[in-house]
Length: 266
Image 1 (cartoon, one colour):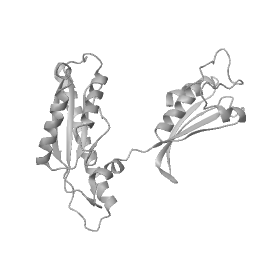
Image 2 (spheres, rainbow, N blue to C red; image 1 turned 45 degrees about the vertical axis):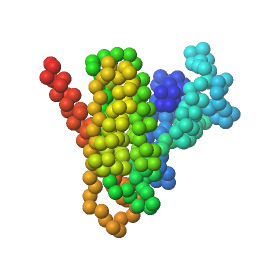
Image 3 (tube, rainbow, N blue to C red; image 1 turned 135 degrees about the vertical axis):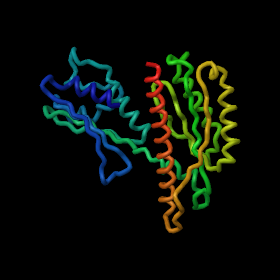
């Protein structure tokens, strides 16, 4: 979306003009981030503003041989925003430049966790953080590495209980290594069956062994002493905060190990 908006802003702004990108939070809408791209170009008239996000639309007053396009960039941006449950709009006057603004929901681990770690209006008794690490056997992975770990992600999503476990969005530590995390509503003993099931299912992917090593581990999510008076929402936030801390430490250790390995090889 930013590429599309920046391309347009640069395309229709003279060389002595400027393009500014801003991101901010709005007190009246704390669940979203607001991102805007402003330019000092020729601006957009009222009729064009009403149609500018439509597929294949091009403002006849702003198209010339040096700035022709397909009329798809803003349409694609609108569709991406829609799929992410955001909004997009433009503020502009002829000769006064334009500002395109869109919103995106702020990622909230607590909101994602709540449906799977709450049962009968109370927090489930125990949780573990399952880590699935995929490390290519070479610095240049065979075949399409992104397709490989995405296949693994889909398999992983079928290995969990949707009402008790949450597969987190992928968080790669480098251009190749990929670490996938699952918050599971079980204890360390129960996680043994889960990690075994994950390993068995992933190893059924025939090409996996020739492309990477697979490591599956589980660590208990240790929470601070419970506060009987704490609201349920705060208890969920405590779990989310602890999981976040554990993931950050895991990623930091991985990055330090990668740097050390690079130095050793040099």
